[in-house]
Length: 238
Image (cartoon, rainbow, N blue to C red; front, side, top):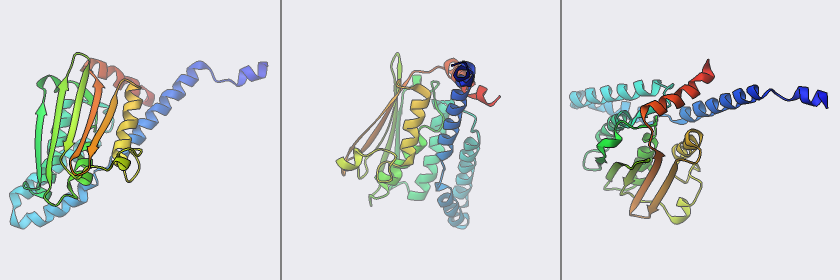
């Protein structure tokens, strides 16, 4: 009996192991987010250099902004204002690639939401899925709509497209499967569980040939609260 007790890890060790595991999971999940559109962007820049150098220069600047943000891997939370600026750069590049006739963007943002904190790189996988799975297969293209609204306790974010939508069987699949919304969606689901437990939720509502709405509801998080969570994750590296 004494020997068995001696083999049991000290509670402090168990807590530290749990924190280290949590940090490892977060890093692994964040590393899954890979802007594979980089190669397409560089190809577009190459083709524009001679015929439209100003647009090519703008694309390079926006791509540099995106890569700079991706290199800031230690940030778990960012203000929604910053997340939206990142998405604007991302979508500006995609609009050039697809043309303004085939890819339109509309934003309806609650001003009260801009300084609230959200998980870093939360929206990009959603927007990417809208383009890749919703609008790219649609010959005439379509529109992406991004919305935010705030209540006393929650922040709601929505990303909608009017693309080809998903069939009922496809929508009911596990999100991370290749035929579903892709690894980006599975990534977001897992990150929300890690960061918020059951206090956040994600919902996908899609209809064939009508489009898809992805809704994320988060606890309303002020910078001070996010800083405390950030410190909890960062402390595992010390």
